[in-house]
Amino acid sequence: MPRPSKPQGAILITGASSGIGMASARFLCESGYFIFAGVRMRHPTPWSLATIGGEEHVLPVELDVTKRDDVFRASEVVRENLAARGLRLAGLINNAAAEHLGPIEVLPIDVFRHEMEVGYLGAVSATKTFLPLLREGKGRIVNMSSVNGLCTFKYHATTCATKYALEAFSDALRMEVKPWGMHVAIVEPGPVDTPLMREKLIQEFAHRLRDYPREQLDLYFEEFESTVRHVEAFVERIARPPRGPLDKLRRLINGQGWLHPPADVARAIGHAMTSQRPKTRYLIGAQAKLIYAAKRYLGTNAFDRVLGESVFDF
Image (tube, rainbow, N blue to C red; front, side, top):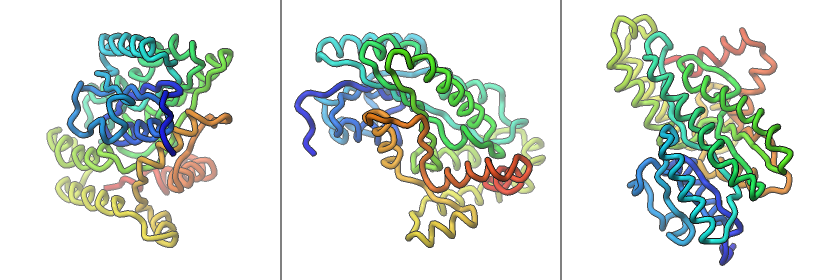
């Protein structure tokens, strides 16, 4: 489908330099929107404008959601460009995230603060700042949660707490902006094939956790070096695409799972942004749906035993 000569509106995406953010930028650009791509550095190396839509359709905006000055300057850039291009701000996608893994006792308190600053307070800051522009155009807001915002797993205290907070924030926001004809959606994918998922999981165990006190690590991992090897093997397994429906079923049963393409999430975000009847929640992928169903029907103790304690039991 050819892209319209004039964009039908503009959308700001935080954390747009890779993964779900980049895939969403590409999808929405092809759907006829002008994209403000929020990135922490003005000229990020992992991507180029040409891969998404070119300079006439995408504008990188330096935006670290943890820095108040960055968020304010980004709002000025967006406001000026909207006026110059005769566009409305049709949407905000709060996608910026950080993820830290490890036992609560081992992780420093600063790790908890950092993840909340990026994944929750960053979304709050961006929403509060851009809400007046969004209200003018009856824009929509999409908050990137995950199945971790619905279920909790061992060694995921920081990321699950952040996503749970984002879920509550989204529910309250949805009710508050409804009188202006605005809509808030929450996107909740299972594991997605992004640098954050592939590299972060290995990095956390193989590098970051290794720097913490060994006497604490030994309380949780019988043999830490063996744990690192198990994590690397786990990532290698789930990174291999399923060979078909039977392989998917086998992986679901044995708890291996697989990584979904970021494009799957981008399509859900596109529906939330463009559909005349957008959903409130988008639970994406067979794994996420199965995990959530287990949480609902098994009860807390059984879920802990079957999934919460075992999925990431390295």
